[in-house]
Amino acid sequence: MPVYAYSTMMYLKLPPLKAVERLTELGLHVELSYDNFAIFGGRALEDKFMTEILNVSHNLHGYVEVIHTPYDEMEPQKLLTDSGFRRFTKWFNLANKLGVRVAVVHTLKVEEGYGNAFELNIEFLSMLIKEAKDKGVKLAVENRPEKKLFGSKPKDLIRIVEHLGEDVGVCLDLGHAHINRNLQEFFSIGKGVVVIHAHDNDGYRDLHKPPYSGTIKWSLVEAWVTRIKYSNLIVFEVLCKDSVQICDSIVEQVRSTPIANI
Image (tube, rainbow, N blue to C red):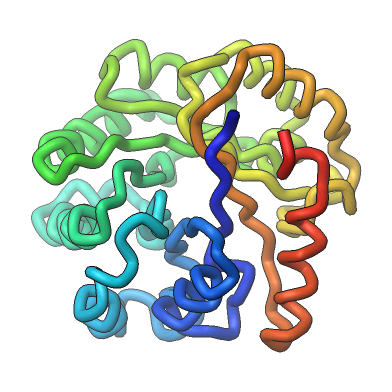
């Protein structure tokens, strides 16, 4: 049986801590998403929001299952530096304090055809692995929506996992795979998937709509999850920018779907 969690993206008008608290008030497990940091100032205010969460971290143990690390400034020249490394170190420390065991990371912003795209990503992830392991956190590398970038195809993530071994897994973003027309190819990864990001779209835009409200064939997803006896995380990464009351109703809509009740 999967472990279900709900992204703080579902309350994007709330700052990070408030979004976490709203989900926990509903009795739900949580993915703490960088999106709530980004919309309230991003890197400039990141430390402030982290401190707010750390101050009440003892109250959140057992609720936050996964963190989604920053996805901005993913160019190699920015990340393969001491400053880039320190930023991710802070996120792993936050995960540790919250009792989180999985951190989702994006691949670098490098085009697939770029000569050493794979090597640059291995260098980046290798930098992170030691610090993540020291904090008890496993990395889950997410497939990108941008078709031209390394990390958008199953073969890219398979190469990473084969090279780095059990220190990393895959975060299968269903919406991103749907845009790139390779969702069923990702099913071949099987138990290498440690997080699923579940949301829907029209097959062209990364809309982060509730499951069953776009064009993904959810019956195929349900069958795959059941067939492989998937028991890792399914995170509903649905976007809501409306009032808390409207977002509450979307949460309830998602909770009633078949994929949320396997």
